[in-house]
Image 1 (cartoon, rainbow, N blue to C red):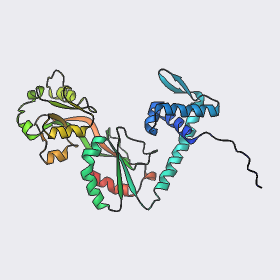
Image 2: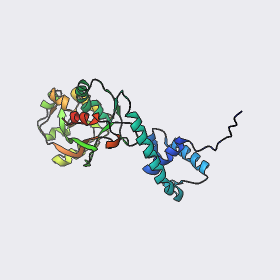
Image 3: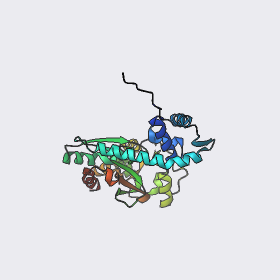
Image 4: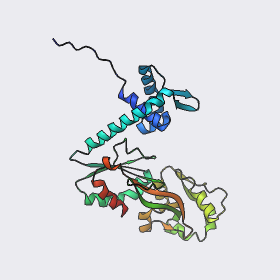
Length: 292
């Protein structure tokens, strides 16, 4: 009979992953967002890791957490290890004969900008499957199994970031309502639809155009920009239109610009791809379609 002596147990992989994410991102909350768990779960995982090792990895205080000397010493090794694991996972995934392209995008981009373009891409690549995940913050393409992301940000010249459109805003409305607004001052008494993600759109536009309104942020609020767009199309009020997002509504005359100033927000719609070594070859062709 073969004797199988017990082996020493290492710490759980989830605990090590929680430590690496918290160390890299600078806190339990940020790590929880990346790992899609609660900050409390991250804290418990790291406590378990500290208990296994018999050493504190973070100093905890009311202001947050800071790596201990032991934590700082271990961080580079943990980061390299999980980077290597991520690379191996991407390489394994890319061997699959059945290709599914996973896209992460800001909700407004996923709902308004992407659909007409994705329809054309599907027609050109019938052999591919596509999935779209709407999220408020871009995921890590190094760690997550997304193939590309679509978010507003600041351009970063590289072979992984592709500029798609500049973000410019101007007031728009349904045609009937637009006809009743003859000058910028009329906006002071109009119903101004407010997107809660970009709460500074109206104040910034008013400041740039020189329009004085007591409270530019006064008006019905929406947690999703696409909801505000639908309300504007129904005539509920004037929307601060992000021109690159409302192309379809403008093209069909469901919304029309009021003929007032158009200003840049300073943001750019950016397509981000994984590093070349982790990238599926077909992504370059898909990127060309999104740029068109």
